[in-house]
Image 1 (cartoon, rainbow, N blue to C red):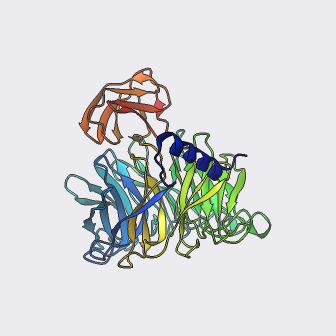
Image 2: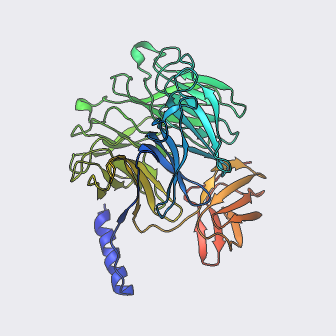
Image 3: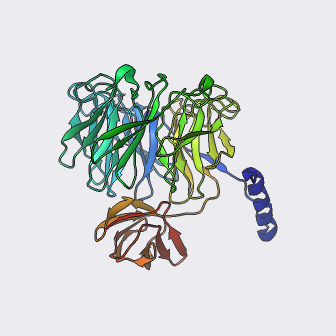
Length: 464
């Protein structure tokens, strides 16, 4: 197997010789420091909107010290959009889901009418927050993970507590805001199906939901599960600590990301060969392979969902460990070649919350502590990856409109779905509306501009 860091070094040397310009493999920049009134302890991943800004949540801070919704631009302008006040919920922690281009959906771990948490939406035009559901214990309690939205505009998520057995639920919220409990954890003896899910679900193109539980399972160390939407069939794919000394990992706190081959990649916060957590891959049939065991010096306690980069590699963070003990950012290939990209120092942040790749190719994220005020930071990490376009949603019916976001799209003169031309409207320099054309097939979306062609970072799944 070719050593990836060595190969990158050789390519960089060739680039330097050919163009007489040398750049470092990655560049880290602190964009903003949270100060309390504009939020504190950011939590969950960021999400990008059509204007190029990134949106996220903080667990505390704001006018009531109950958390905020914020935006941060790629140049570092930080804005507190909304301060939670308990009636709308408190302690938002799972990040946000984008519906269309101007509506964000999220959850709070507490607050609301019963104090058990809420589901809310915020519209970008007015920044008005509306409560879509108040949890009441019996239908779930303390939703810590975020939401995933399907083509029918239904939202899916988990609660870490509550439900019929008090150990958490999987739920669906319809477009009319009717909540249905799809599954109650601890439905089997000794909770061998898992308990306390705390991560955002992933939805595949065929309608299957995948997720993790932080505890429970056959060995009380968490699980990976699948729920088929059409018939609510629940399957435990893997129970952690099934291997000697838990070398397969334990206590997964992060969600999963699906690669183009259908396999799912994730992390465990503990266990592995050294007890500091793992990176793993699991098939939809439940065959799990440990790709990397953290050793402490390269990070420990990975607790944020991985992101699939446009180069086909996975990028993530650890909440602790590394050269300074404050966490790391890392890259890992689908076969397990691992590289540390950044060691946090405390001054530039501590305990990072994962990464998201912006349409400029750069990775963006937050830290839950550290920085100039000790309340966390927003940062970016450039690794030399090229710009691309992102699709909202990534699955849709033929003849319907989708949103395409990117950079410098004003002069776009062509949009194709896997080679099939589509009609489109340019809304702004960062947004194009395109109709899924008849005859289109599943594959990449391409937007041609005067400066070149931008490809989507994921395949678009066409529903006939």
